[in-house]
Length: 222
Length: 313
Figure 1 (tube, chains in turn brown, yellow):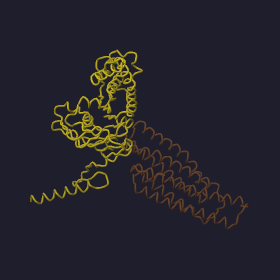
Figure 2 (figure 1 turned 90 degrees about the vertical axis):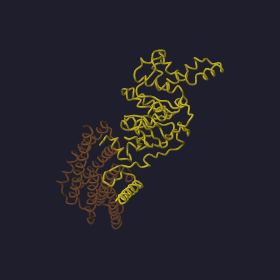
Figure 3 (figure 1 turned 180 degrees about the vertical axis):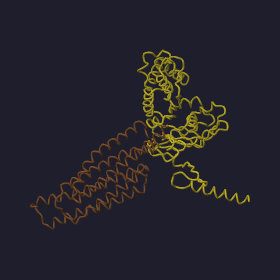
Figure 4 (figure 1 turned 45 degrees about the vertical axis):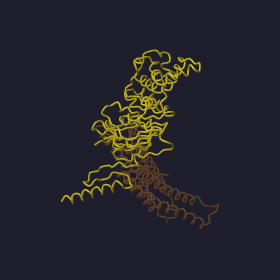
């Protein structure tokens, strides 16, 4: 029966996207640990794994296009395929951000501002992604809104790190003679924080598209 | 005993009323737990700028004991395409035919309610049916040209309708009646995007045209009497994709000057060509009516969702 087959394809697509999301989440968590523990092996594994993520991303994207072309979905089915198509991009981007973190873990230097606990930030970002994937899998609107709320917390923490960097630099009274090592350390920390913050944004995007899928509302999209 | 059962049923009725009066749209659940969707008034309330071209109020149509249309109200804006969709037997064609009183021709059909065009009730006593059907033209599923020349097919209506005045006017103005007719034939065929294909064989029999050309000829014939509303009952269902696409293009063009109402079984077609879509479901009930993109992206009614996504039963 075509309708049953179509439904099975939709269910398969959802499962495959959640699975890819879980793979990317695992990579992100691994990169986060590598970053803190200076684990270059783990960092390499994350970097190498990105090719697989990209391949599966393209495969799933083309499955969405096939469904649009062959089934011409409407209403809830259309919202599901359209949302999934967008969510795939967010998942793939999170994969890239995990690679960024892993690359920074690989060429680890002396820690700048060791009192900043990057773990706290990656922990929140990972939890947001985890919840967003669950919300997508279950079509849970309330969970989508919770992910968006959690992003405020992450953004606040990230901003605080930037503030600490400013304070530190002012305290060191660095002027034109800011050394290369210090410069690299500052740059590394700020980029890391920005990447983690971006992971949170992508998790919110996943939640926003899921909310559109479930309710047809665009309230979380911006 | 009887008193208490009466009270029970009153209570039940009360509960049901309460649930249907809820502000939030959605399926309501009857007391025995069976999900039964109540149609919410706001699902069929479609508001737009300007006066409606067609205004239907509490329309009921029966075929004998069969209640084909149940208390349908809807306003249709002018110069737009309104698609009527729904499963076979949902009453969409009956509804379409009620807009130019074609159901009058069916002996057992009985109509109740009001259908107004430009605010004027067409079911009022004394309505001139010839005049009405001139204003409200109709195109059917199978092309039905007369077995006459292409020219005669187009000129037939005007000759029958306004012919005498037209001829008189032409003579008064010192114009050639034949030239007037030629102009009308050309204009109608051009409007129906058929002129280029038939201009050199206007005297050929229309039966020799392809199905798609015949259907455009029927549209041209309908346009020749200068209608305001064009009703189409599955105008492309008997045509191949190329001919279908020509009809669809034509419908879109016509909507710049005419109010077009189309019944179609092809939901993709409804999505492509219409500005508004009305969904009828079994039992002659209008369940949802609104902007076409809203109906196909995010319908309010679960039954409409199930119907358009193909989830039956």
